[in-house]
Amino acid sequence: MNRPIPAAAASRGQVLLPMLFIGLMFFVLGFVTWLNGSLIPFLKLVCDLNNFQALWVTFAFYIAYTVMALPSAAILGRIGYKNGMSLGLAVMALGALLFIPAAQSRHYGVFLAARFTLASGMTLMQTAINPYIVCIGPRESAAMRISIMGLFNKGAGIIVPLVFSALVLSGVGQYSDAALAALDEAGREALRVELSARLLRPYLVMAGALALFTAIIHFSALREPVLDEGRDEPARVQRGVFQFPQVVLGALALFAYVGVEVIAGDTIGLYGQQLGVPNFAVLTSYTMGFMVLGYLLGVLCIPRLLSQRAALLLSALAGLLCTAGVTLASKSSTGLSLALLGWAGVPPVPDTVMFLALLGLANALVWPAIWPLALDGLGRYTASGSALLIMGIAGGALLPMGYGRLADTGQAQAAYWLLLPCYGFILFYALIGHRLRRWGKPAG
Image (tube, rainbow, N blue to C red; front, top):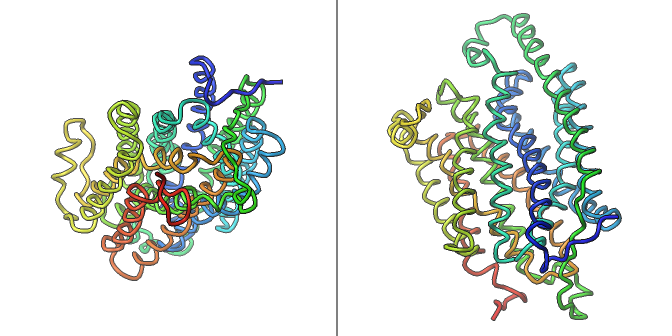
């Protein structure tokens, strides 16, 4: 039986091995999560959907975090963190297998059920690995450790659109709305059958890889973390985790954050497609690339040069500025991308698309900063607090749907104003919300 790791006394070796395993799982989570950005325009074509309908992919995926977060906390309480990680990977493998009947039937509901199942397994994993990475070392450097995990997660986000484009989306760029309209009904149906069949092999491979990772984690030397029991007052024992405003407001901040992160990563392909960007299928990689840059800055600067609170504050301000850029910048000029990425030979994109990609940089340190700030002082309520924070991921289900509705009924570029109040709340949490220890009273 694996011995637990005391949070405050973990040695360098005791921290390094768990971080390697957790890094592997963050890579897996990133690979599955950021498939959405490429899958949405693909299923829009295969299932003949509009923007709002296509974004049900994000709803089905992220709503699982709300539905399954509290059950996940209960499961972790019974079987432990390590076994919870293994079970989460096994459920993800089942979700990948569900893509086989989905691709064969081309029924949109089956695709959504498959994404929900994948996300249910991911919810269990997220509920386990985020407090795990916070508790295995000093709290003041937790955001740095989560930033390292973010490199694995968003590194996968860079790779996924490229792999998916090579395996599944080859030649799809030629099938514009006008090109499809020129085909007769039989031609469109034949095209959709052929495209859907391309999903079979990749998801079979994914299911096999997830099964392998399940075995690796199950037989690994990962130890259970020992959570700081903290000081529990009788009133707090009775009222539970909702007595802690820093975690409740943290969950709301994560709701806003995940919503804007998903909009930046998953709608950029749709937006680029509408603007006629030739490489729209890989635009998620632009956003993920800037997120990786942000995580690197977090690893280098936190806590030596930048506190977790300061990182969150700067991220919120950068998000507000980039949102203004997305909504006001030119849809024809490519000067910004040429200035930033032209030296690397990256294909240029319109300035408004580049500002949307730059939101990846603004978003990178929000998740790493909120988790340690929100879990501070929870003691025995850490697992429940983690589940509450995971429920905030529902922002990735609801806010993109709001964007999709606005984009269909109005102008896609103007619909990005939806991001402003989200970054405004993150700014509030950075300034005030994280300091509250009793409702209405900041920490002394």
